Length: 477
Image 1 (tube, rainbow, N blue to C red):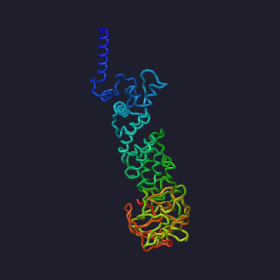
Image 2: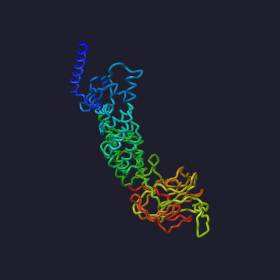
Image 3: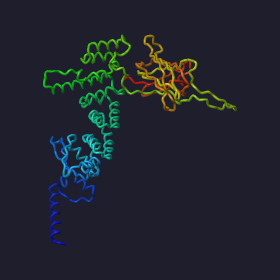
Image 4: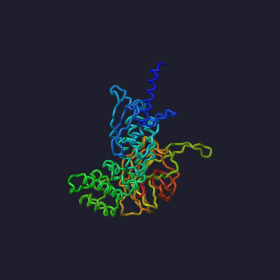
């Protein structure tokens, strides 16, 4: 072999060795994974430089990469570096929406399938995986984030997840907020959320917190935001109006009518958030001068998870079934019909206060029924009964083995402990399913329902069989 060729090869080897020494001490690793790990953020042979912000030094730094490795991991990089519009030579790519630590973990995953996913890097890794179409990292980050989200950081993570359009993770955030609302909204990050996220919080039905406590934190949010606006304003003497800061939509999403008058008078009326006319109007509502909540204020149910008290052990369908009695078979018509115009009713009491939000009735497949539902206290002569009527369609699919429908109770009925409550319905329509094996006493979510056995309604419903599949209720927070 010619000596000139050997000298040339030796020179190239020395140059490579010297280049390695200028970067890192190079010892050829045994595996390809280790060799790739060595090249993460290594300027050796690099033809791509990312410009990102380093949170530790608070400066823009360079992070090195290699077109070939990036391109075989991501179709976005492949099109960027080798597509029809690709540029020749080394490239410098600014990433103003990414931090250095997260980018390095992203490159670590691309080069050697390793990434440390932490609370600090998870959102950015999710963003990079979506942006550059790396599905395996996307799935891995989603799984890790699912466990990272907790009651202390949920309001830090939720606004970022909403921007990334991650439905599963957004649902996880709301589950955590609804399960332990009080601790979630008392975190420091609650006052840092944007107003649109605050409005989404106030739209939630199943927040587990008293309305007055939720309103107290809403005020904290508005006051914090007002101080920030004042600090940013050139006119430091100008005070921000917290009503303007909070916005009309958020104000009217607060469910003032579900507070007690003591709660309203002790905090809301003195907060300066509502006008004098609004305070007077709500005060009239609390004192019974108005039956309906004032127009413009939220008319939804009180917050809290809604539970279902299922009365029966099993359900029967409206069919004619043959049975054998003694030695001769005969047909028995097992059904619940509404041809007589008689009412079905059931009487019960509870040992702790509850809020009745609806009644589930038995129906039939593809059937609609005219319903007139009433709820009232048996011994009360002062409280007006709740009454609603209309035509209700059974759901398309069976629920727990039967067809039925929910009748909403609005405004909800507050039931005090140990007070006999009568639920009564007059129905018109085809035969329906019906319940059997009802228990006289049953526990549901910490509430004991007692159904009175000596109350048989004109259409046949009793404590143990007939209509009223479920009682939909909330506990008094």
